[in-house]
Picture 1 (tube, one colour):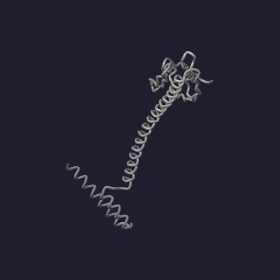
Picture 2 (cartoon, rainbow, N blue to C red; picture 1 turned 60 degrees about the vertical axis):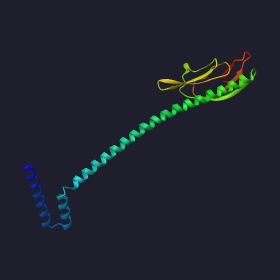
Picture 3 (tube, helix red, strand yellow; picture 1 turned 30 degrees about the vertical axis):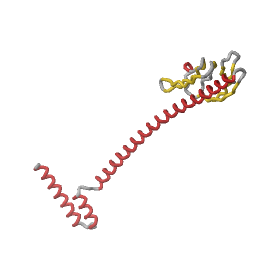
Length: 185
């Protein structure tokens, strides 16, 4: 403890000596007062510049960290939104086909409707089908898929083009009462 106290006394005496030299030399009184005050309070222009640079770096680092977190969250939400849009498009297509199939079933042969549907991207071909009383479109969501399906009043049969796009479909009743759904192309 003694050596620390002695070091503090020698620093103080050095500061006092520098201040007295500054006052005695032919310098402006304002400069001498400011320099002595900085020495007494342990401040120097180099110290303040270094501290300001460090504060700037820390602030910049936190800002970049917050922006990175926000970008990751936004990217995740965009991906989730795209998958939800695909599922909604599949629901709309399946509902439209079901509505048309039920209409044709109720009115019987030779009823025929032409409808337009939008097939979304990421449809699973092996899991999507039109058979028996079911219309099913399977939408890929990550490593698995979500089935969007509806049950019709009558037996349905048909094939779907499973690439993304708008399709015009013919929904018609056959003589045996089965509803056929087919692409116009």
